Amino acid sequence: MITLYHTPLSINSRRVWVALIEKGLAFELKEVNLTGDQFKPEFLALNPFHHIPVLVDGDNTIIESFAMLDYLEAKYPHPALMPPSPEAVARVRMVQMVTLNEMLPASLPLTMKYLFGKDDPEAVAKAYEKTAVVLKFWTQQLGDDEFFGGQQLSLADVVSGTLAAWLPEMGLSLADYPTLDSWRQRLMERPAWQQTHVSQADLEAFKVKMKQRMVGT
Ligand SMILES: N[C@@H](CCC(=O)N[C@@H](CS)C(=O)NCC(=O)O)C(=O)O
Image 1 (cartoon, protein in one colour):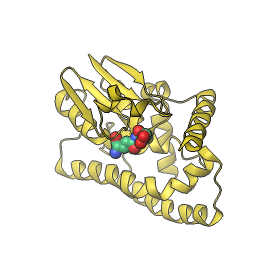
Image 2 (cartoon, helix red, strand yellow):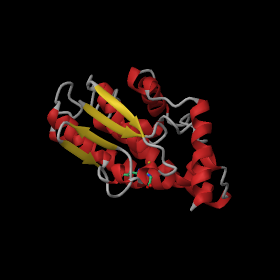
Image 3 (cartoon, protein in one colour):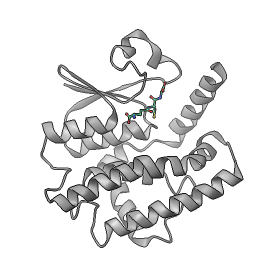
């Protein structure tokens, strides 16, 4: 049995959750309450760095969401989430890493504003400038294709699409990027995105938990 230790709102978890669903795998979810459960000995035995997600598959315990995605692709290759051509592999990897290394830090002030009400107008203005560079890059990489890997969903769509799911709510409209907007719409209609979507009620509960955690530290 595959078990994913996760928190519903975490995009680090959600990319693995979506990949499990897209691959049609049977798995169970165990929710970790990030107000302290991640420091309990039983969780630290799974991940000494006290982070979710953690994927357990039989005797294998895997930390780091990108390692999990690679593991799932290698262990359960059908349906493939990595296209075969070298050019497409490069594109998938570029989009994955640009999402992680450029888009996530660039959009952080928007996340802080959206999730925690921390409004820093200067940082938010910079965030719009920096995220625009990523949106242009994503547009270029997508071209006229349905997905970043071509006509089929890839790990690049899983990684960037679980972040893109939030962009309009975070105040980043894709109206100036029509091909990206349609791509996002296509993803949002997929069962994997719908099943992992966080309700407004869960979102509010998460905000409360994080506030408690910040007060406690
Ligand atoms: N590089 C890790 C990042 C994991 C991570 O930062 N997880 C956060 C939630 S999004 C976490 O568990 N935070 C709790 C803590 O650090 O105590 C991955 O991709 O799996």
